[in-house]
Image (cartoon, rainbow, N blue to C red; front, side, top):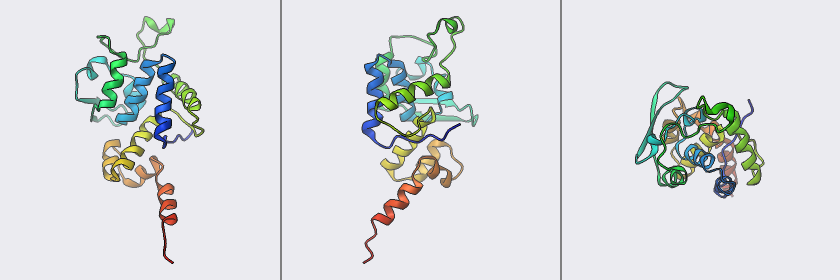
Length: 186
């Protein structure tokens, strides 16, 4: 598995979403917005049901990896993106539309989502390695950039220590470089 990075340019984050919408990939755009704004892993997001979002203020999922329940607020960005796809349906949002999966109601695969994210990231001019975990890392990165509070990021991502969180969101070297560049010792 290749290391993926957060998207550190908000214009590019939005360009990925906008390109999905322009291609009429509204559910994919919703998944992308949901991942970027909640920090859930794609394996958990793919199981989300319409009724877990519709009219709710929070989304609580049992994380597959940690086996712990995690609750995240549903922010206005997610609510707005949900309006694009909500037509009163019930059940899983990310059901595959392929003929072979229609009968089983199988959800999208991680590979499908990764392939689509790579495609739309390239269209947005993102040259770094992108995958399904990019959404989670982008969430962590922007929570940190917005709050400057690593403890919040650590808690939101369910990490056991801050060193892992720093490495995970790609801040460590960036912050070291910024610190040195901002020195004016004389």
